[in-house]
Image 1 (spheres, rainbow, N blue to C red):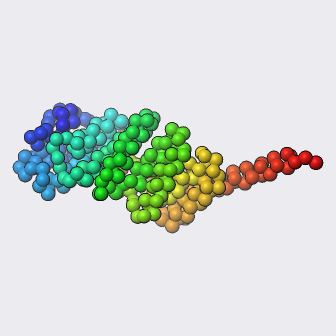
Image 2 (cartoon, rainbow, N blue to C red; image 1 turned 180 degrees about the vertical axis):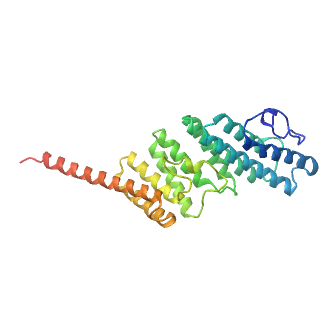
Length: 275
């Protein structure tokens, strides 16, 4: 890992360089130094060394997403770049599946950064890389979130059929008990506009399915998915939760739109009949 990333060199020493502002990074500097010292003393296979490596990688990702919330894109990408190098450099920590899992988390968060910047094709590329890694790892706990991330990106690229397919994949995984891991910060903020992190992930999935059905002109499917999102949010968050209320409003709007379209269709049929 090069010195601009303040990573571990091939000898396990922490390299110099790469200055970033912000008190939030003080703990990261300490963790980097601690890991470097641990590697020099005990090697990369030591149980505590691996634990510190995982913790540092997770901290890179969490801190990067905090900077993203403040629109500090360069700082976020710098931290995610460090996380990437920590899992792809010549210094190997943990098992292969551990590295794949952590790298997938980093790629997902890189995708979130580029999506926020409007660089959708770049965001799509990183999300697809994340999904590929997750399909190769037996330890990945995040494919459902990655599918929802892909859905959000593809929707913004107006590729609504593919977006819906990824949402349907996420739904299958969620129903099978595959939930998004807590170590993937950022994703829940980007699944859809106005969806908050504490939302029910299953409800979000149904909501996004409804949105994609609407884009495709599949109003019956949209309405079913909207009401399912309300049902799930009500069970998991409570009927009075703002998210549940917001989803209910969208469902009511979809119902009204469908009824209006049906009336227009009926009027068109009547006018089209010959006396």
